[in-house]
Image (cartoon, rainbow, N blue to C red):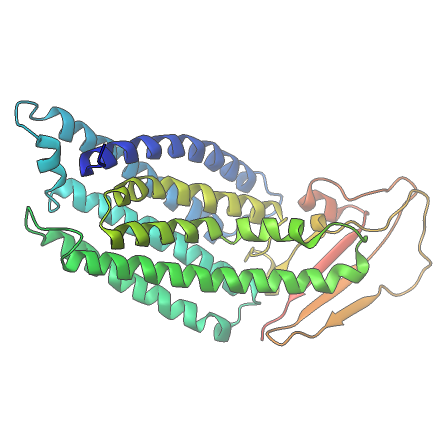
Length: 345
């Protein structure tokens, strides 16, 4: 059975509703983490989380409304859902596109700023991704304008709208790939710097998994699928288009949770680009061990694209064995403590 636009829209809304349910749970956890932080959460973390929630919720509501109108407004009209979804200049469709563009720009701004923080607020490193972000804003505005000018019956896969859609997705994809690569490269360098002080063990693959997840690679893969379905002229594009907004929320809210807990990099609340990775390091600490009174060792490793200074202090008490589970509270206690400062290029 051939996949038509109404079927794709219906399936897309169903998938979007399922993804939105998962997103609500992740968003609840995200806000709980930010609210319970011992220190004041970064404004950009809170702003990103709340903005995404507002836009994604409105997007789901508009999609459900469009589905109801398409399949119940004029049931006597033959193939009315096809006629309804073939009309692109309705206020509902334009609002849906505006909301999707808003979700995309908020998520792009988040990963751009996060790469900026991870790289020690280096303007040089962030120049190219920032230019891609500006181009993304311009193309998003042009996309909404073009959509409002589409004539009913016009082939959406062959006209100027299709070209602008593909450029918008491609530009967003390029920006996310660049920022993801920058973040992953920096994290790998930090892990190399702390390897001499960590326990041996743990393969490289297991270390790369959280990097891939937290660097929003899932979002990049979805964008590739979106571009492929749009270029092929498949109605499956509408399935991905409808469901991608809550998936974006899931991915980026998960990143915010990790950053907010202090187990991931990119919290602007930490001065001078400081990133906390204490939980990711298993220190060689034993009950009853005690260090002599001496100056804390300092290890500095130069990197070609920005330095990482690792300052280690270790105070071991009789009953101390491992780091506390709560990083924010644990660092303030007299257990093992690590601080990794990402310096500007």
